[in-house]
Structures are given as C-alpha cells and as structure tokens.
Amino acid sequence: ETLRGRASLPGAAQDEQLQHLERAIVFFFRELRRMFITEDFMQNKVLLKMQALLQAESLLAVVRAIATKVVANMQQWGSDETIISDTLQLFSELTLDPLTIEELKKIDFIQMLVLKRGQCALPFLNSHQLIKARCNIHRTLAKILLTMGHTADLFNAFLAPQAETLDRLVSTDRSAWGTEPLMGAVIGLASDLKGVGEACHTEQAYSALLQWLSSRFLVLADYLQHCPPNPDVTNR
Image (cartoon, rainbow, N blue to C red):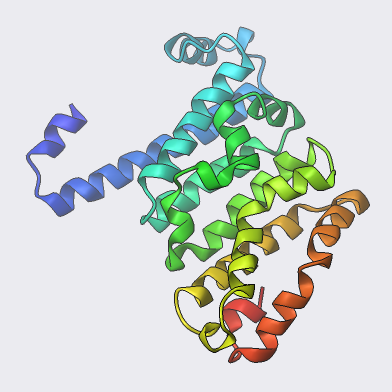
C-alpha cells in the first residue's frame, strides 16, 4: 500500500518517502539485532513471529538478512549521507558481539569486502561528501579482519586499495600532487587509515598496521611536505 500510494506523488516527494522508509527499515533491523542477541527468542512471541517471517532458523540467518540489507544500501544509496550513515552504524553494531562477527565471516560478500574490496561496487567510497563514511566502514571491516589474524598477508590483502593509491601517488609528478582527483584520493586514504587505526586495540593489531605503514610512511611524509596544507589530510 505504501508503494502504491507513493507512485502517485511527485518525484521529490517519492524520494523523500522512500528515504524515510529506508531509514525505518534500518532502525527495525537495529532493534531486531538487539532482540536476537539479548533475548531468548524461544520464549518471545514477537521474535518467534519475526523468525517465521524472515525464515530465520538460526542466528546466521538473522545476521545474513541484516547484512544483505547493509550491502544493498551501501550499493544503492551511495549519494545519501543519512542513509549511508545509519546503515554503517547498523553494520558497526553487528561487530559488537564476537558471535555475530563469526557469523558475518561466513557470508561471502562480507569476506569480499574485507579481503577483495576492490572488486565490490560501493559508490559512496568515491564521494568527497562521505569521507566520514569511509572512516566508519574501514573501522568496522578492520574489526572483522582482526578476528581472522594479524599476519602480513591478511593486512596486505585488506589494504590493497590503499596500497594502490600510494603507488599512484609515487608514479605521479609532484607538480600534480595538489590537484584533483589525486588530492581527493589521498584524503580518502587518510580517512581509511584513520578507521583502521581506530579498530586496533591490541599490541598485535597495532604492530601489524605499523608494519604495513613502515615501508610507505615516507611517501605520505613526502606528500605532506610538498603539498599545500590541507586539514582534510593533516587532521587525519
């Protein structure tokens, strides 16, 4: 009924209603996650009903349903800051519990996001207006990565897109370092690394990140030295 009613509205009104609907769905999934984690759903009639509607026979099924929505929003709402922000908050909340992290790691697309992110179409990662979102998603993905281990191979796979940005910086003449789109790429890189750093809470995690940075730090230092001061880079 909601969809049929919206079809008769002007384009702007349709978009606004659709945005409200999407935010409501994300809110619903946030509450559903809390209930399935904190409640015994075999004793809760509401959760039993939702379990039947979602065909959720296990925690993995619930996590998969939520993760599917998270991925869909990241792919389809790349220019909407509010929906992306709400969606990434939901994604972050999925990593608050070690049990749900283990379930997330069983989902193929989540594995791709962690280890083969360059193959995933996520338009918001290329938006200068959503730089904060880049920090948020890399913090969440790094939390998942760190449950897989702290090896150099894992970090190299996880940070392959960032390594490509640094390689691009090295191969570009310094006279172009302060121009777009390279400056935007460096700002995004700084935001990504900030998010990864925020996810590191152990000596092993920090050591793995510092090891990755050790051979690349001089490139970033050289960039800061030769480019005009830019708080979007230096503040990160």
